[in-house]
Each structure stands twice: as C-alpha cells, then as structure tokens.
Image 1 (cartoon, helix red, strand yellow):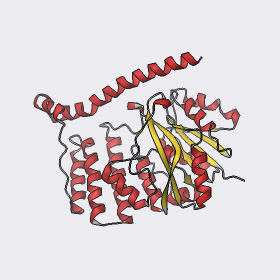
Image 2: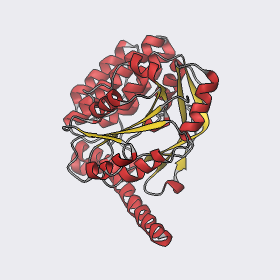
Image 3: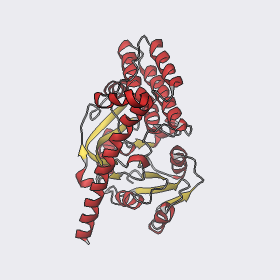
Image 4: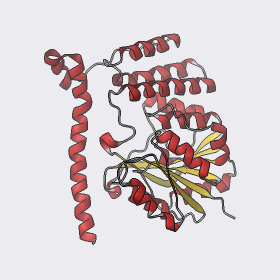
Length: 337
C-alpha cells in the first residue's frame, strides 16, 4: 500500500476561495489521499460550499471560532495519514505537488526528513504566479534553514511543506495562543525535531496574496501584534537551541530588526522588549526609519500617521492590482464558459 497523505484545510470566511482550493486537493495525482476540512465558525457560505464535497469522501466538520491553529489541530486529530499536507483555504497545490514530494520521501525513506518545495505568489490567476527562488530553495540542515530565514528575511508558506506523521506528532500541536505568524513558529518547532530539510524542486504550490483578508496580514490590533511578538521570541529560542554562536545571535538581531517596523511606534513596550532581547545577545536594534517618500508626512501628521501611511499605501496599490487581476480572471472564466 502507498502511504496515505492527509490534506488538512482550516477555513474561516473563505467562500471566495474554498471551492478552488478543494479542487486543487482533489486533482492531486497521488492516489492514496484524504481531505479533511475544518470550518472555524465561518459566518459566510464556507461551510455549505465545503459540505458539497462530503459526498465525495471529504471529511467536513465545523467548530466554534477558535482560530486557524485550533482548526489545524482539530483536522490533525481526525486524519489518518502517514504524511501531512497543510493547505490554507485560499492557497492551491499544483496537481503533482504531493506526488513529487512523496517520490522523494519514499526514495530516502527517512520520516525525520522535512520536505519543502518551491512556491509562487498569485492573486486570482495561478497561471500568472510569480516564482522567486531564494536561498531556502535547497537541501539544508534545520539550523542553516532558520539562519537563512532570519538573516535574509525569507519564508515558506504552509502549503510548500510535506511532513511525516512522526515529525508532526513529535513536534506537538499548533500553538493556539497565536493568531499571527503561527506557521512561522510551528515549522521552526518541527525543524527542532527533524534531521534535515529535503527540497523537492519539481513540487509546486501557490500562495494567494489575498490582502487584508489574509491570516498573515499585519495590522495594529493588540491581539495580532502580541501574537507576532510571541512567535518571534519562540523562533529565536528554537534557533538558539540548535546553535548559539555569534553568527546566530547576529541573525536573530537582524530578524528582530526586520519586524520592528510593525511595532513602532504603536507598541513601544514591545519595541523596548525587543531592544533588551537584542542587547542580551550582544546586539542592538535601531528604531525603524521612514522611507524618504513617507518621511515628509511626519512633519505634518506626526510619526504615527507617517508610519501608518508607509504600511497602508502599498496595501492600497496591491488592492488596485488585485482588482485588475480579478477582472482579468473573470474575463478569462467567461471566455472558457
């Protein structure tokens, strides 16, 4: 028997995307698979759309809204897979994504190897996804993977991974305290118990840039900022467990510096904690500087207004690009009808 792969989909108010995401799971060429969907108390049609697939063998359950991590933990508790494919409700898998990774998994026969893959960023049209290979697209040790992530400000979305049940169970459940960057913390923790990261170049997933509705969108809410800060601290602890040298401490400080702009000037308490953490590692952090094209706003509106403009105006530009891509997607859909 081929190993069973469980595709686990947490969903909350994802009626715009969930159908396409489920179809991408169904289209996987790996034959021995199961799909588990947990609706996390959606207030739109997410649950009713997902339930249409129940007659085709998809496991669909609903729970009171508790957050994505709780939904993922529930999905894992219901699955039987030898390997776990995490899939957010707005992302997509290429048809052979799991097959390509499973081919490597069976060849190396090491359940302690964590399988990664390339991914592309898209809005509505996956065919227009932009792929930006970086230093993480390689076979790496856990410590080198985290070092590169920290020092070069890189990341890998959940759909790009394939994780054995052994690693999943050893790493412990998703941290339900986290509402932002829960995946960054979780996969760093998986790396603590893995032997190596095996990159599979022919496997592909698609990460949807869905704007303010994305779980990864950072705003000034206390819950999100506190979640982000906790996640950053935990990831630093994990990396330093693997190696605590000067190069690692410098990478941790760079990691903090890259994220500091999301806390300054709204949460000066967190800014001060970050500075103290860097100091404890023999490093220092600079207060974030506004880019030149936003600095003039500070003269008239103050630092908070200028910082808010620096964060929101690029989002507005992306929103316009997203609207255009949506229009083109609908035009292409009509042409195929």
